[in-house]
Image 1 (tube, rainbow over the protein chains, first blue to last red):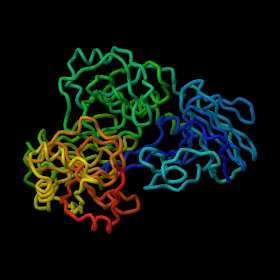
Image 2 (cartoon, rainbow over the protein chains, first blue to last red):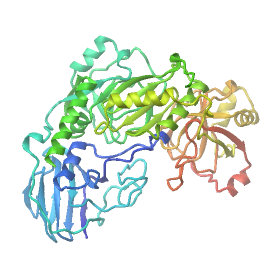
Image 3 (cartoon, each protein chain N blue to C red):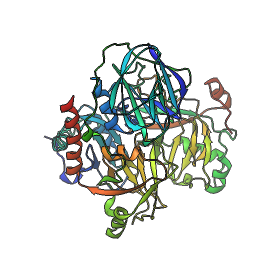
Image 4 (cartoon, each protein chain N blue to C red):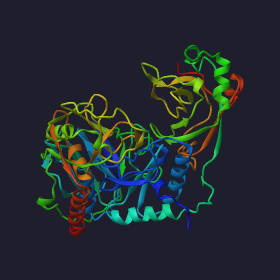
Length: 307
Length: 237
């Protein structure tokens, strides 16, 4: 049983929590750009945390159900409708055979997550279904393809449905503009003046942003060093290339690189950033490792207690 | 107990809430690279470690911050480092790899530029390039792309001013003191001097990538006919 893809959308990708353990050969992880939204989707349906979902960027996607099931929608509000009737994200919906689900375009945020009871059924490659278009890996075909018209998104039919919604206070605020960053890597190679500059400036999300990295436009930040010996790049690393315009490296990032880095945005902050569109303005806020760990544990505890 | 000198212990710095960077040295050399390869091998088995990114002088350790405490992880890493048997063969799973290369102008369009820049004949370039045993200092850029060093001094040449938009699969190239093989079609600015018929990356194989960090690599010149028999393709330029 399956959803049939009537309109494929701008970029709808099969994702799980990512392909881990292969970065030593240069293979990136992939995975959901907004991890908390993804985790809530599976929690709402009592799924395994790693069950396969669809990450819908921007919208323009129409699906038709071939069997009954229960779904959860989290993340952005993409002007979604069920059989023509408008519905809101961060809750579950019962799906009947022949129902039509449509995601139009962003009202709030950029990426929505569609989870189905039991997860979408998809053959993993190297232990994960995560689609990485650049590396031609994962997804329905195993070759990194985004959803195409006529694709079948298989699931196990189920008539069981629980009406559930994420508590309002646990829903992230996508209008938040401060993105927390842990100072690390080469931050000491930036003078205190440049650091102050970095944390007090507005940066605009460039149109040249994608799942690999978000490019920022703003006052150029200069480092006392031009390059470093190439080293491993952690999720959220903020690289400052020669032109001084920061690049936040996200799920599909390259594994190693030789530009100085200011630190890493937190996984929660990276999720918020991933919901921003070109032209949106953000600021970076310094955070200690302690605070970042604390923030993550609180969000995870909230989710796990609710489960 | 091992005879570990405290000055050779890597520094360990948290870079985010779920990753720490081990820095072994500020200079690139074979001893440092051996130690990183060895520790990478040992840390693969440590509970809570999700991913490892070894490079020239550093090792990034990504761990499961939801289930493991960072202080406990760092303590466990230190424990592994200080308990490595000093008599253990240094590279536990490093191999020696021979890569056949057809050094011809039709697949190595930068051979004449390299020849002019280095003041060597094309034959001399091929000889110098293939008589050296290289070491894989890092793997990255794209899956399976191994940074191999060091090329002989006479072969040092800067990257091209304008990178090519599409470098064909299997292209063998040099830049600065490094050489590499392009595992997939990507943009690239290195000087291309030949091509191998071997697959550098195979998602169906056990190792996935032909070359891993720490491996020794040698290039072996083959003729145009041998290249074609081995399945080499001449297209792409």
